[in-house]
Image (tube, rainbow, N blue to C red; front, side):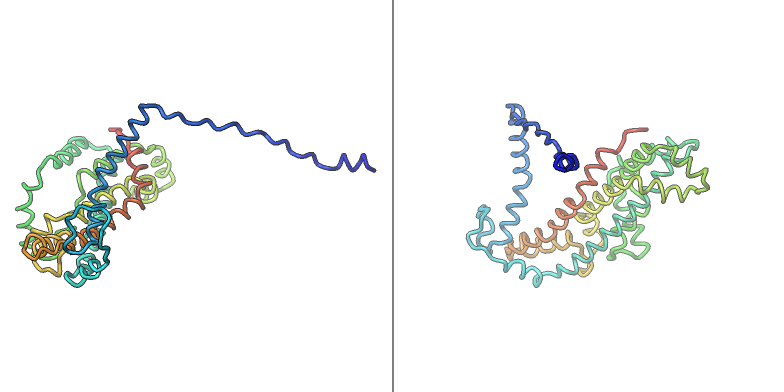
Length: 299
């Protein structure tokens, strides 16, 4: 009985010793690279740290250049909402930014898909013309565009700030086209054999596969529309239609160089408008890096 019991008991698994961890040696070259990266990071992040610190300072201490405020106050974040219609400006900016980002992404993807998928005579010539528009300075088309919107009666409205994105952007068309060219064409041929039309292939196969590039386009255009000042300066007159950059310009004229010298209001409003961009980048940085890394150079 004793022998049988010993035979029935399962043997304990043998423990495999883990290999010892190798300590990474920091070479002088790596140390120099890390030092340079840290210094570059501090140089780039210092202006925002200074701005954030100044937003918690009273009026007389804004320009003392101390990163830790001597007098810490939240009153600036309460006063800015009373001194300016920040909520309305933020809503206008969100509306314009979302419409601009979505329209330019969809329209550019459609044009890029046409240049990458369809084979037709003169395709490369037309694509070259599209790329040539990137070399045209924005100041050249500024007056004609204003005359068009003025004739349509849309000056002092939010429409000119986003509606022109319905026609795509040359840079985004190029970016998305390169991504589409990196996709295996056999997928599209197989879908066509199964009875899918061109629109179904584009929406059900091509668009999901180029998700990182689409997110990059959204982030780029979101940042461009959020920080755009030139077009609001040209088209907007009524303060109720101001976007955040145009509103910051008005605050700067009133409380900055205008004579009242309430710089704590200006820097606090600047922090409020900068934080959404930081949050957006952190939320989309994985797709951002993936899209940049996987966008091909195939022509």
